[in-house]
Image (cartoon, rainbow, N blue to C red; front, side, top):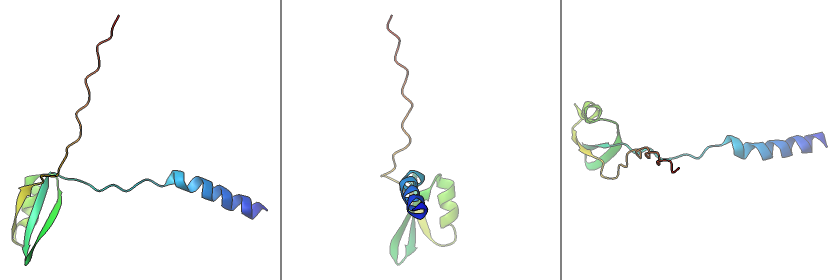
Length: 80
């Protein structure tokens, strides 16, 4: 009986420990010249992208699917 209670406790707690995976979205993409245009949109800056492309061929371009962090909302004025 103790084993069943232990297993049920593990099953009940496990969903609370798991976080959902989310894809990262970055502002710069490297387009690599490897026969077919291979895209890597995992760069924070153009300089980082250029450093990756340097020597292997390709170019960098802005990621048109990038959505930056939302701006914090201004506090609403209090009404007295």
